[in-house]
Picture 1 (cartoon, rainbow, N blue to C red):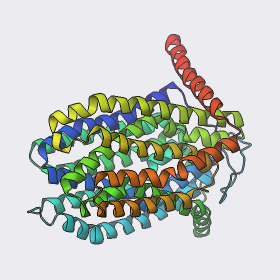
Picture 2: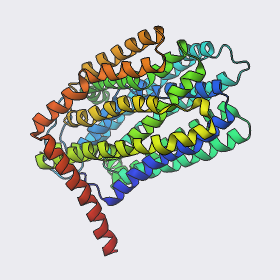
Picture 3: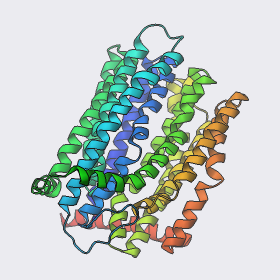
Length: 474
């Protein structure tokens, strides 16, 4: 079944992203107010450790979701690389059930491994960096974050499945509800004096609600639950093994990409307390948080159009592929630059009124935003290759990110502080990934830079005009 998005899907994509941004914007003043500078720095570390969920995922949720999309679009088989072009518009529910069964067993093992790592080396790390903070509060908060990481990983693939079949509105409605619950709980628990423990409880509640509602809505979407139930044949162990080996070919590469993204986005926050104070780490973590939020808002079209890009490729619609890719890149670039201007001129002055010691300066904000822009910009183009079931960029990503962390550690040891972290990322990504993959994608799609701007602008106008027609018809 071909995936097509409407104005409602795009609207909910931005609502979902804006609620996520709004959650950070609403919670941040309370976190800054109720937590000490050291506790805020620890909270930034917890945020980075919580992102380890994607590391243990090792690319399986993305790869399984992509194969769910292929089955939904009528593919007759799953392949290690490339796809079998679809000649049918009917979902292949037996193939979908086989992929989902294999996925469940894989994530049972991954979540168990994550729990062991959180309980042992994770706890030792938290005890080490909090050695000067009296009381059990950091370890109690860490317990809730570790439990949330385990449960989020075990159930986390259903939200990816929703996006894989094109249920963009449903996926973002679920995200919106879960985020609102997290906001209310975080503010209430902080106000009641629970400190950083309250943020851990709220994060656990957010993850549980997101995963459970995603599972419910996925099975309800366009009769998927009934379609899967109609498949009477049980999935055999041999079929699970075959599916796993097929998926593993690219999941292992997606895992390398996941590790590379984690190193590029979060590892520097984890190593910085080894060279800087927790208060200084808090300044850097806030700049990363703001720029990451901005990148997520700017990438709303990127996230929404992944199933469209996959569907266009599997149906061999080259013009749709070019136009969708142009929409992704053009919208991301324009929105990021406009958002950065708003943060510098409005966001930072407001935060400085609340807690000036933790607010980054304009130069630091621009520096962190520069490398965050580079990371998502290259991902816009590499998403084209992943949608064709090829991951040729995995090794390059991993090498660049590992070099970035090593360079960051070296510059920190030399006393460069936050600027050591910034320049390490800009240099490691700018020397290869940020220009090679866009160039290769443009050549393969036979898409010029000028066409990217023109098609991107035309597609944005088309979405707006279609929305106006729908509003007029109502």
